[in-house]
Image (cartoon, rainbow, N blue to C red; front, side, top):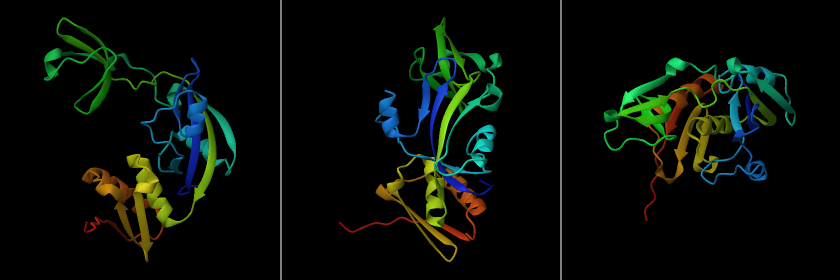
Amino acid sequence: MKDGDFILIDYVGRIKETGSIFGVTNEERAKKEKVYDPRIRYGPLPVIIGAGFVFKSLENVLREMKVGEKRIVELKPEDAFGERKEELVKCVPASVFKDSVPSVGSYVSIENFRGRVLSVDGGRVKIDFNHPLAGKTLIYEIEVVKIVTEPEEKIKSIIVYFTGLEDNLIETKVNSGCAEVRIKNHLELPAALKKVIVETAFKWVEGLKEFSFVDVYNKS
């Protein structure tokens, strides 16, 4: 694999110390491992080699792989989500939460930072803003499922990566370097998200000159 290659991968991610699964892309595998969640969209993860879609250490392994090949990769904390930082455990006044004080174990967002509530005591809420997998050694079982070559499928894979949408909700057409994208069910993507998608497509989809999101309405 080389920079700019679009691939689809399946993976199972485990915490080395406990063996517990934190991520899996294949629905049948999720059911087999007894971690299936009907709220999750299952399917291969789109990856553009060189675009930072996965950890650099994992991407380096993918560069050496071929379609159909499987590998087991161990990532130390510094190669994954980093070490835990005590300075990211903070106490905030309960008054910050206008509606209701969150419960222990729940996740909250403050100034665009997401953290888990550790304790609630005396009008103070203690929150851990470290990533849940910070400080953990991770084991990935990865398989390269497919190389994506068609521009329509490349654009679709970019949208799936950034939105988590089912790929059957995305229609793409590319003609003479002009791309048109329609999201079914009239799902509206935020402007900032559209901007990221478009910039990624222009950078990594060869020959692309124009990109449009199209709204289509049918008379009932």
